[in-house]
Structures are given as C-alpha cells and as structure tokens.
Image (tube, rainbow, N blue to C red):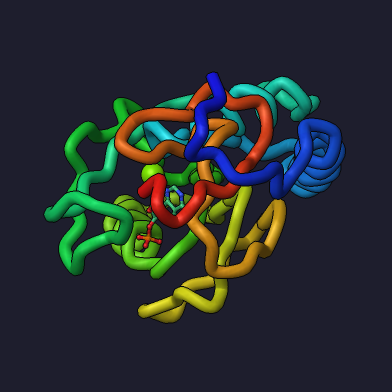
Length: 178
Ligand code: IMP
Ligand code: MG
C-alpha cells in the first residue's frame, strides 16, 4: 500500500482513533434526543465516516453525497456541484456533513449553502483535517479532528489521483511524487 512517493506519517493510527472517539463523544452528547442524519462526503471521507459513526452512541441515519469540482489536480477550482445527491429529505432534521479535509473551503461552503436551502433544523460540519492557511473563502468546521500545515496529505481515505486511500494513517507525499 505504501510506495516510494510516501514521505512520512503525519498522524498515526492511534492519534486518529483517539481523536475520532473524542469527536464522537461530543456529537453523542450534543445530539441526544435529536433526529440526526450523518452525511458522508464521498469518496475522501468514507474511512473517517465509517470509524466515526461506529463510535456515536445514538440512533442515527446515514446518507452520502458526492461533490465534484471542475478541473483536476490538487486544488479545488472555483465551481463545485453535487454529482450525487442525498436521498433523504432533511427538512426539520439535524444534519452533520462529514468531510475528509477543509482546504480552500470552497467545497464545504458550496455544499452547506445548497443543503441549508432544504430547511434542516441544524447543519454542522465535521472534518477529520483542516488546513486553515489555505482558505480562499470564509469557512469554519464545527467539529475538526486535526489542524495541519500546508502539506499535501494522503491516506485514511485521502487520495492522490485515487491512490493511497487505504493507508491506515495520514501521510505526507514527497513533492516529486505529486
Ligand atoms: P476545498 O474545496 O479546497 O476545501 O477542498 C476540499 C477537497 O480537496 C477535499 O475534499 C479533498 O478531496 C481535496 N484535498 C484538499 N487538500 C488535500 C490533501 O492534502 N490531500 C488530499 N486531498 C485534498
Ligand atoms: Mg474530497
């Protein structure tokens, strides 16, 4: 699963597990008695989502959404659209959108704006990672696992050209590997 382009482990399996448990405990406390729908932003958040929801001690519902941004490569272009929508009606429900990383903020800003028009009771964002120094639009996650520096990372669901999603920890890539 590793190759010569993987540089070093940035966040270990143990740290991810501990932090995920902390976030799940907070969510469990804060959403008791609510009708909570957790939405996984595919594909990057799938590994984090699978671990997170199994630590939430509440009767939740789950759904998935796919956002695509025009233009390939390592950064998000200006325009984002929903290429696979959720199947549930979220009006009057409590919603947590789960993402792998907040980078420029464009994806989540767009997704939350679109979902907010459907009148959920509340809409929050949980992201495993956050690169605050890269922000192009004003956006803050509500539940954030780790703030990281401006380095391209892979593993634990995050990819480079669809590779490395199965690494069990978050790793950096060598600059020449990109
Ligand atoms: P944003 O719209 O710029 O915030 O981009 C968010 C998306 O960009 C994430 O869902 C990832 O798919 C991708 N992305 C941003 N930074 C990284 C990274 O360091 N590694 C892998 N994917 C990244
Ligand atoms: Mg993504």
